[in-house]
Image (cartoon, rainbow, N blue to C red; front, side):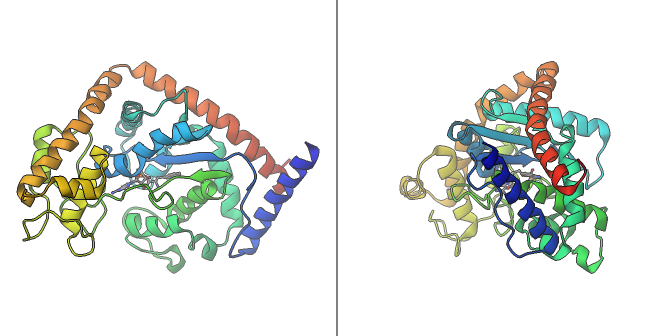
Length: 341
Ligand SMILES: Nc1ncnc2c1ncn2[C@@H]1O[C@H](COP(=O)(O)OC(=O)[C@@H](N)Cc2c[nH]c3ccccc23)[C@@H](O)[C@H]1O
């Protein structure tokens, strides 16, 4: 037992040393330990088809595949852009209702609010003092978010775009790396092959996104059946009427085929086979129907859950307390290694 914890401490220490040195490859932390799943979602904006198929559906499945599963409503990340406090407060509860309605089960996983686990920001500060900027800029999540949230401006070049500051950009990266370098298995479209990347219905070269200014681009989980039909009807395809799957040559139709396969649980080949004889205009409506059918029970559950604010608050409080307990142990170890304790 003592040997085991000494080994773990050594691993953590070499990890911290590697961060200080900016080594290209910091050793993986606690490789031999029990695997833990960790992922998160921002509370702002309404959950969309991309979030659902690309993340939440898998989150639900992972609850049965791993013993230790944590899902975070990442409110700290959401304030890199201005938020109205009242709206943010409500969005956190709404996202809790949505996740529960999708099948996140607090008996099987820890669902918590990021800002309520103060160890997260403590660890982030410690890491931010140790990690070198070039190393941070190599992290995949960092690159993606610098591109998508800050229009590609890099803090290394000292630029700041939009309403975020260079300081925020750096802290964002460190907040993310606090989890990337934890003992967690981080879940995202990037590291689970089974996850699907859903494209915008208006521009199939772009990812479907909560913040897309084109309202027709994103199918939200709370959209009415009429809205869903309208969005699919207006979805960008091409001039070929046949339904085929060819992501490189026919990105628009292929995105719709992929959504169809994902919501029905059928293979891409099977949905293409079943659409034989249908033109893309009719096919889009068939896919809209499949999406409506998939979301209908979830929508009903969301409405029910939203009526019980106390329950939602309690779920988050219990989840955050459990997450804090886990984070406290890690944070104490890091504080010892740093010399605070
Ligand atoms: N069009 C799409 N197709 C497929 N998947 C998609 C699509 N759009 C979004 N996703 C996935 O949905 C999850 C939540 O997205 P967010 O933007 O809220 O949130 C994100 O993009 C997180 N990085 C937030 C985060 C911040 N800190 C964390 C710590 C751990 C894990 C996650 C986080 C994500 O899994 C995202 O990959």
